Image (cartoon, rainbow, N blue to C red; front, side, top):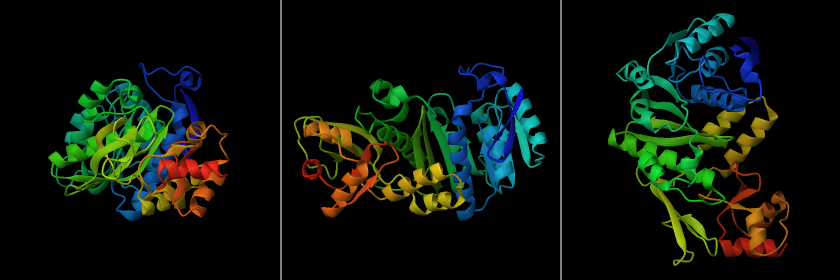
Length: 364
């Protein structure tokens, strides 16, 4: 094992994990390239602690405990439970706790759902629950929601990008309860399918969820939601796109072609960023790159679902794409709402129709 520092926390990691090839096989797994994901998760935990009580944090699939130990060192949570079914990984996690002189961390080596079931009763639920599996989180959604207290935060990762991205539609429908669509905004559709799955399972349990923050980075889709004591109505639906003219939007407000339209869903069609939560994350960020990213998320909160890319529009009008900042300014000058999107470096959200978008770009 070799010692590294991530954030303010010292970690012991397999020396082999720092090479170009990262294996998920035993004895233990650690991905150094996921440091950004962990950094953002710490900001989310800190933001949650400013809005709700910083009580208990449950990491059900902890690996070597990198995220859980960082929560213990870098946030104000009272009690951290770190669980992984791999005993060797938990032994490394214990050594990391000693290395950082933290004493409020408890370790276990159970199956994730068994671990969560032990924290599903009154008084023992987590204020934050984290699920970070290989592949789909769907098998853990039920027990994860049960283990999250009302008004607590559930964080969940998905890495089965091919299923969510439209390569295996039947599998996606079986696993997430909705059908994806291959588009330039496929990552957003993937996120909304995960949120849709969470919503449907929560509804069966008499609970609800509202998104706080979401991201798509490398081969990770990750969502952070608040778990509510009652279902949230009217946020499941479909996203529709005409594959001919490029019109898009949720099915309630779609006004494009009807003959060549395709749809994705059912999925979450409501907002995916909570402005106040993202603002709290920005307040804790000391990293300029993270602050810029989170500011984009803040700016696109409340904007319509789906986005366009400048390359896509330029191709349709047979022109070169203008600078993205200039395009967004031109849309605002024309009276439309517009913003960058955190999902794509060339993407932008707007309430303008595809025809108006093309006209604005053509006039530049």
